[in-house]
Image (tube, rainbow over all chains, first blue to last red; front, side, top):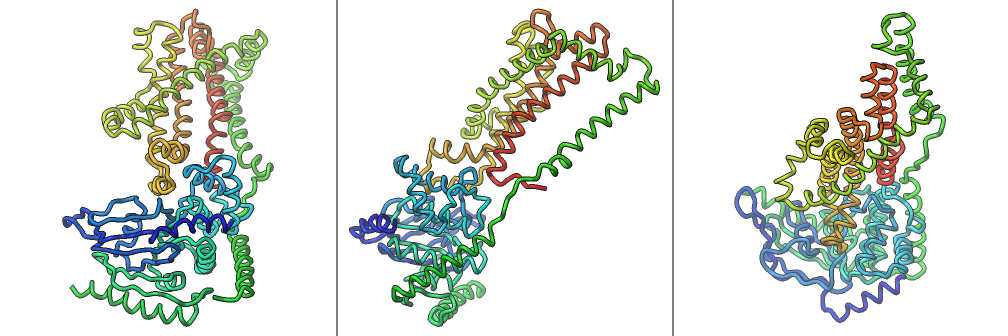
Length: 262
Length: 296
C-alpha cells in the first residue's frame, strides 16, 4: 500500500518542485472598485515538502489555494503544478448519495483506474486512514473525524503529487483534531506527498509543517517564513512547538495591528 | 527521528485512540420497532377513516339527511362496489384509468427530464420559458380539456395531451429546483476530482439533484391523475371505454348517487395507492440513504 504511493511520489523526484507560484497577484471586483487580494506572491513547494500557509482572515490564503488548485485564475503571474493537485476542504464535501467506499471509487474512476481494481484500491486507502470495514457506510453514519479521513482517502485516490488542504480540521473538536494531526503526519511521511496546508491556527501550522509561511492581510503578501526542524513525532504541547508558536503569533499580531492604525 | 520502537508504540496508541473516538462519535441507527410503526403511523389514519364513516352513517341513521339522491348510505355504496366486482367490471374501470394515467406520466417523464436539464443548464432558455413553466403549474389542467378536444378530438391522444400539460411543468420544475439546490461545494469537489462537463452532470449534478427530482415526480403523478380525471369526466364518450372519470359522469347522468360516491372513492383510493406504493417508498429511499430523513 504505502509502497505503491511512495513509488508514485518517487516519480516526481525529476521535478524540482511540486508547485511553483511566481509573482502571483489576484484582484476581485468589489463595492469600492477592484480590490487587491494577493500581491506578488512567490512560493515554491518542493517534492515531499509540507508547507503551511498561515494568516489572519482576509489574507487571501484560501484564494491562493484555489488558484493553485486551478479552480480560479490569477490576475497576474503564473502557477505551475506537477499534475493536477488534490484538494481537501474544511467541509468534508463527500457525496451523500454514495457510500464512503464509493466516494473513493468515484475519484478512482474519474482518474481512469480500471474497474476491476477500484474496489481493492478503495479498501487499501480506507485502511491507510484506519477506516477498514467502512466501505459500505453512508456519509451521515460517520462522525466528523471519520468523514474527514474518508475525504483524505478520496483525495489520496487521485494519486496527485500535491495535496492542498483548506483548513480541513477547523470544524473538528480539539481531541479529534489532535488525532488527525498525527494521522496526517504519518500518512505524509509514508507516502512522500507534498502538502500545502492553509490554516489560521498557529500551533497547528507549527505542529505539522516543515515550513510555515505567514501571509499579511489586505493585500496578502508573504510577511515571513520559518523553517520548522522540530523532530517528529511532535505534540501540540511540546515546548519547542510552543516557543515557535509564540514567536509566530507575535509577528501575526503585529500584522493584524497594522490594520487598526489607519 | 524517534526509534522504531517508540514509533510503533505511538502508532498503536494512535490507532486505539482513534478507534475509541470513532466508537464514541458514531451514531447508531436502528429501525423503528413494528409496534411503534403500528401505533404511530398506521393507527391514526385508520381511526380517522372510521370516524368519517361513523359520521356518514349517523347522518343516515338519524335521518339528518333523508334523501338517497343527495347522500347514499355507506351500505348502498358498498353494494354498488360489490356488484361491480361480481360483474367483473370493477378492475376494468380501474385499469382503464390507471393504464392511461401511468402511460401519460411516463411520457411526461420522458419529455420533462431533458427539458428540466436544459432549463437548468442554458440561461437563455430558462429566462425565456422558466416563468411560463412555473405559471403553468398554477393553471388548473381542466382548462386544457376543451382546446384538447377541439384539436385532437374525443380520443385517447386528447387524454394524454391533457396529462402532459399538467405533469410536464411539475416534473421539469422539480428537476430544476433540485439542480438549483446542489451545493456549490459538490461542484467544486467534483471539479478537483476531474469531473467536468458531461461527467460532472452525470456523476455530480444529477445524483445531487435527485431529492428535488423525486419530489417533482411525486407532484407530477398527482397532477397526471387529476388532469386525467378532469379529461375523463368532461370528455366522456362511450367508445373510449369506461374509466373512473366516466363512471362518475355515468352516475351523474343516471342520478345514481351511490355510483357517484363509488367513483369518487375509487379515484381517491387509486391516487393514494399509487403514491403510497411507488412514489413514497422511492422518496423515502432517496432521503434515507442521504441521511435526510429525520426521525421524529
